[in-house]
Length: 192
Length: 192
Image 1: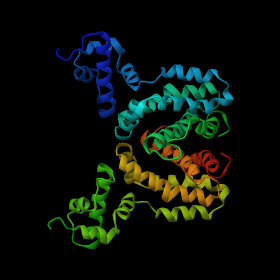
Image 2 (image 1 turned 180 degrees about the vertical axis):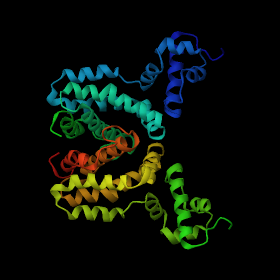
Image 3 (image 1 turned 180 degrees about the horizontal axis):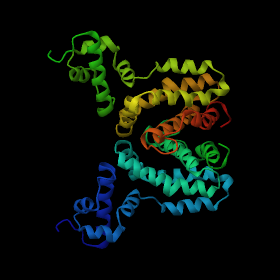
Image 4 (image 1 turned 45 degrees about the vertical axis):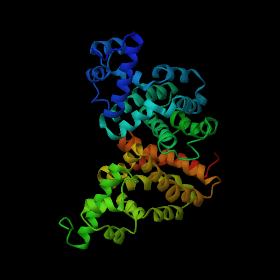
């Protein structure tokens, strides 16, 4: 095919770029391995070769600095009493380290307009990140605690990166982590 | 004009429907009194006649059950110690009473994809609603407190109505108000 890139790394990058574009603009359900392969000018088998499947491709397109499961494991290795504050710091680190918040902001935008992207973000937030976190923190009713944590961190993303609401938009993590961390700490381990 | 509706009420409704469509899909800046008038098939002077101007039209298109300023005044008339919980209850009442959360959800969607709609929502949230609320509650640093409250209520709207994250999505206000109210109470009047 004319569009196919020469080296391994070029091919992988082309697939990833097409995936980001697809998931960000078409949503999760409407983006197939086949449509990504077509946009990247490669054979669909190469997408499976590099990313395993659609979920792997999706997670790679998010460009998280760490694998989500490892993020949770790392957080749970610290003292449970400072978990809330560390969650805020990790969340801000992940978002702030991506220029323009690219793929994560695209996922949030896509979730707001496509029901299937909302379902995918829900799954990532709850099943992969926040439910394991709430379970690990040892509180009762992990589903409820995970949803409460989601409400505050999604709200943080919305006010800081989408609505750009001051003084949250330009606050240093040191200013936000203690205040919002206290909320997350109560949602994770406090009496509800 | 062929499209103009006969009675006063029909004309007003046609303008309002065109405004909701415009603000929801094109965003705040791209929607003009003229474009709304054209879509409604009426003379632009009628839009000014019924809604005063663009801000009046925008607030009417949101279809809040109360004028936003009156909402804040009402909340500040109760005991300040229960303000956080009453803010959550009022917020849920306003959103839950609109089938499908129509115009407010449209505004949130529009804010996520259009910078000018984000600016408008920011203004409505801060200048009209939350800054007066934080000022009235008497805490120091009203701007910071208003932004913190915004982060939790916008997150509540996102998890309940957009991501439909359980158990928040189907929770009764009595289940949410005490838990999130405590967060808002601290953001409004507690030590930060």
